[in-house]
Length: 145
Image (cartoon, rainbow, N blue to C red; front, side, top):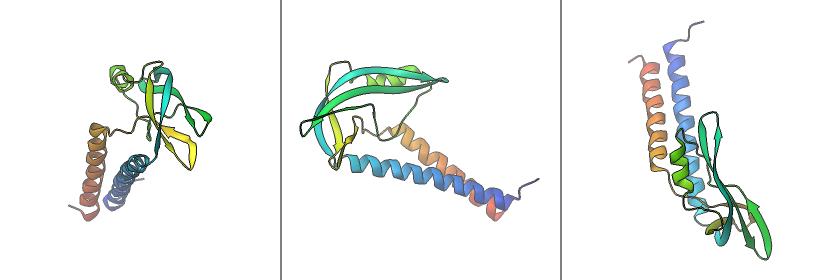
């Protein structure tokens, strides 16, 4: 079964818009977290997890909010994996065992927390390039250009 250029173009635009929507959501989420409450936490474990040639920063930490103890493994608003272990190692470098760290937590749900909200500018640019490529190629295909 062959797909017409118009249908292929529409599918490409849809994928591009989906990637762009995900990117916008990550930006919104990071900005929302910047307004969360902040407390001190302590790193309990810090390592790089490997799964099928992907390397993910992993940090387990504890923190206290209003006298209640919490433990979390949520590193950042969006899970980033790397294809080279040294990149993941570089990200967790500041989070060594026993170190006192800044924990951002949702005041309405203190168990919801993260410790890394910095932008991954390279990944952000990649999202934009990928989404715009799909949208432009899809538009050209859908209009027959």
